[in-house]
Length: 97
Image (tube, rainbow, N blue to C red; front, side, top):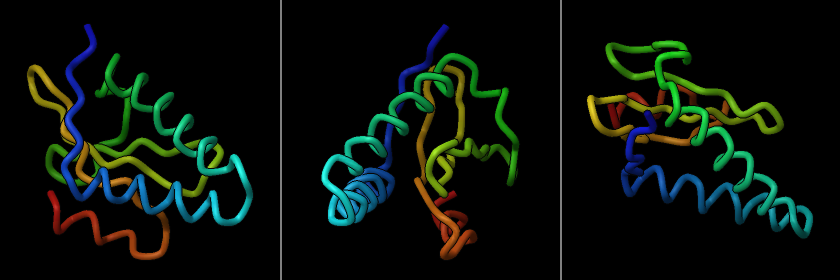
């Protein structure tokens, strides 16, 4: 059973910023990033416990084609997305946990 997915505002901002950055590098690349995020969110929604726990109940799912990870916390009925973050400051997401 898929859970409802809820993005915190900061996580939405993360996705938009990264999409814009990739789009500024090559036309269409921002859309590719967005599609990769959507595909991974579908997998997370279907079975969030397949992904590595990194801190308390926070889990991480790594995008395969981009150097970013989705940090999320599953609950009984939803997935709360805390951050979509890259390697530049990997501990930044912890301030949102």
